[in-house]
Each structure stands twice: as C-alpha cells, then as structure tokens.
Length: 133
Image 1: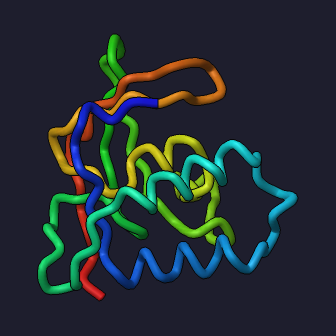
Image 2: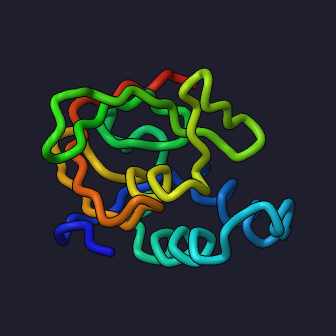
C-alpha cells in the first residue's frame, strides 16, 4: 500500500466514530480482516483536526467524491459512508471497503495507490464535496 507520502487528515469526530466502531467488533465477521487492519493502520497515521480546521477538499465520512482510475477516462462518483449505510446502487461505499479506506483523509487533486480486489490501482481524487453538519 502506498499513499505517495501525503499525510492523512481526519476530523476528530470521524476518527472517534471509526475507532469506536472498530473496537466494538460490530459485524466483525462481515469484513475482510485485511481491510480492518488497513483502516486501523491508516487511523494511527492520521493528523486529527477540529471541525472548524478541517479543509473542505479532504475526503471524510459522508463526502461525495469523484475519482479517476489511472488509464481510464470515466469518472467514478461515490459517497463514503459507515458500513450500515453502504448501498452500491446509490454509490454509497463503506469505509470498510478497500477503496473507502484508500480515499479517507486525502485531498482533491491527490493521487492514491491502493490494493483492491482486482489488483493494485492508482486513483486521482478529482472532486470532493462535503456537506455541512
């Protein structure tokens, strides 16, 4: 796994929610243990910021994101959500999915390399839209 030496930025409330979710073991059997481990590793490296200091162009929970896979012209639009809200038909991707973990905490314009079920992929984050809470 490689994130091209860019620091992961997370809002403290998102971080606390994710850590709590992982510690609870809730639905643990539903997730690939490697995906859980990758998310835990990413959370440990994150720089935590308050809501008021969080950049609007960084991917967080409930962000709407447009990404482009290297070598393809199509843009993929998705929303990053907690596992219980995931719905592929609505393009809501779980934070526990490899692509969800890969995008979390990275900015618009950044390139992310990540291992997904179909192999190693390189994505460019084209656009990030965060709803105000």
